[in-house]
Structure formats: structure tokens, C-alpha cells
Length: 313
Image (cartoon, rainbow, N blue to C red):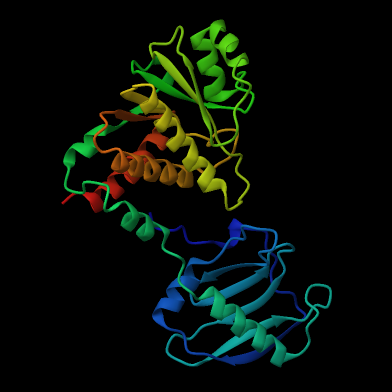
């Protein structure tokens, strides 16, 4: 999926103060560099000191932890000289030397203008040897459903559980209520579950014979979020295979109270499931993404179809 373009409202930001100074910077921007800069950047770690975005051909650079605007760069695509406004409020930015400002801004642009690492292409290359790209039956192993996961008649449903496995809100609570008190009794014997891992119980009063409980990550912009969320799907599918399960339904793990952005979580879910199917191409299984509402269903539909366009001729 294409990355969302960052806007001013995506992060805390203040306008350039009246105490400012103007100067010019000499720099030639390539088309690739400009394309990357136009995407902007939202900080993901405490050490990540800058938030920037573009409006038209103007780049606004803010300190991430204060939101103060430090540089405004007016880019002229057809020239090598560009106008810069720099913050001169000593409470917000202490540098008063234009040459130092030029050096800093050039260093930042060198870094910011680098193309993002293409994780999707790496992933596609990684699985190209194990996935049968021409096998249209692969697409038939994935389906979407909008509604209540507890009503699905399949071998197994997946519970987006908390680490105690003793029930909670959202999907977790709904599954425990529908399955009945014996589920809680069995879960008490499992000694909880770590984030990204999975454990299995009987389905009790559910149409599904089994429940696989997995603990998704609480979203916090840390680098291991994607890995832990991906592990939820991988470990659940591995456990399903170990237990001879041939139909399984997943909720949108971590997208409720745990705060994982739906678009990002959907991308991880679909990508991980496709990778697992490719590595287990001879195992017969039907995988359903159970969507709580139409918004979720439409997003899954878009993501699934976008990936299959890359697989199928």
C-alpha cells in the first residue's frame, strides 16, 4: 500500500514566530528526493527529533518534542537557490549563525531525502520462491466476513486476548460470553500468554471447535510493533496446523482498545497470512478475516485485492 502523506495536523506544531530571519540556500533537488520529501515524516521514537511536511512546494520543519517551527524552506524546482526562513526566538531555537543553519539544514535534507527502505519489495522477493504466484487457488483460501466472529461455523476462531487470557472487553469479552464459563476454567490453567504468542482451547458453546488466543501489541510507535503483530498471525496459524485445523477466522487484532491503526494493522495481517500460505502451500486451510464493521471490511477488501494483483496474472 502507498504511504499516507503527512499533514500539518498529524503532529503538534506551532507557526513560525515573528522573531525570524531569512536567507538563501544553494541546493539542487532531484525528482526522487522531492518525492520523498513530499511524504513528510512523523516521529516514531523519542530520539526522533524532527517532524516535517510539505504544503505545495514549501517544507515546514518542526522540532518533534516541542512542535516549534525551526525552518521554512521554499523549494523552487527549477532553480538551485531557495528561500529559507529560520526561527530566531531564543526560547525556541538557540542557533544565531546562518552558516550553521545552512549546514544543519543541508544535513537534514541529505537524510530526509533518502528513499524509504522498500520493505514490501524485500518481502515480495523473500516469498517469491515459496509462493506459487500463478496458483489462483491461493486466493480461494482467503475470504472476508462482516459480522460477529462468535457465530462463525469454522474449525477455529482467533481471540484477540489480553495477556491474562481471563477475558476482557471487545472481541475477547464477546468470545468468553458466547463460549460460556468452561472457557474461563480452561484459560485459568494456561498461565497467561506473552505478546505475539498463541495458545489453544476448546470452543465450548461456540460453533467453532477451537479457540486460539493470541495477545496483540499495544500500539506505541515502537519498531517491534509490526513484528509482534505479525507473530500473532504466524503463531496462530502454526498452532492451527499443529492441531489439524483447516478453517480459521481472525479478528482485526490490536485495532480496538490496543490502539493499532487499522490501515497499518490490516497491511500486516494480510501480508503475514499470504507469507504463511506461501510457505505452507500444500496445507489445506481456509482463512477468514472477520471484520466488525463495513469500514474494516472495505479496507481488508482493498488490501487483499491489492496484494493479489501482484501475485496473479
